[in-house]
Length: 150
Image (cartoon, rainbow, N blue to C red):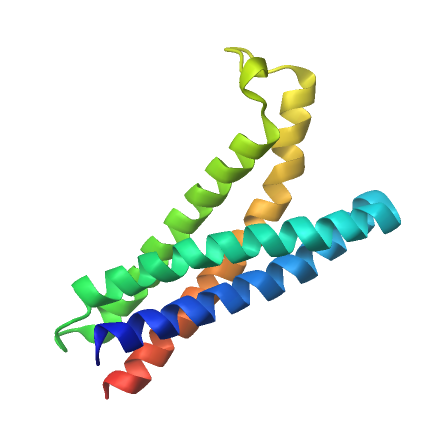
């Protein structure tokens, strides 16, 4: 399989899953926490973050597949490891991005305040949702690759 085809498929699948799941889950989470305004903000914020994380995830999973799954030896076992690595790094990226967006540079302190603790908890639920969606997205990409590699 060509590198262009691999990256094209990894990117569009990951960005589409990220955009749709970010909008759906972000809108639902916003609706629960803030009614109509929360729905609008959740949809837009979730879609934007989902698209950005999907782009990074697609590049990462495409790179891992190209570097690690090139040979047919133990392809199935290696594919699951690629899924786990991609999902774990996606969760780390989401955590980093949310931390940067939610914490202004002039308010970073050594000891978190009650507001900062609340914000970490408030951000934990979307990160868990994002990690599950990322895991499923990576499984779908790896399954597609295994199907195409045969």
